[in-house]
Image (cartoon, rainbow, N blue to C red):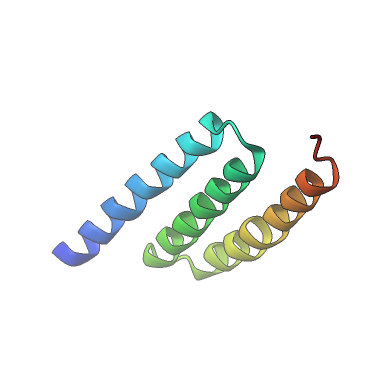
Length: 80
């Protein structure tokens, strides 16, 4: 049980740090990549909390589709 609690705390800290980096990033691409890290950490955390349905949708929709959408929009509207 101690190892599982430690994994929860590490993933929670990682998700919080990535969320703060998402908001505070100066470059849009860095913000999108930290958003991806936050979504992956939350997906793994949901899986450890025995919610595999939510975890799969977290990884598929947020980490997959939204990050691809954000990165493609950032690259298409990039200004010099």
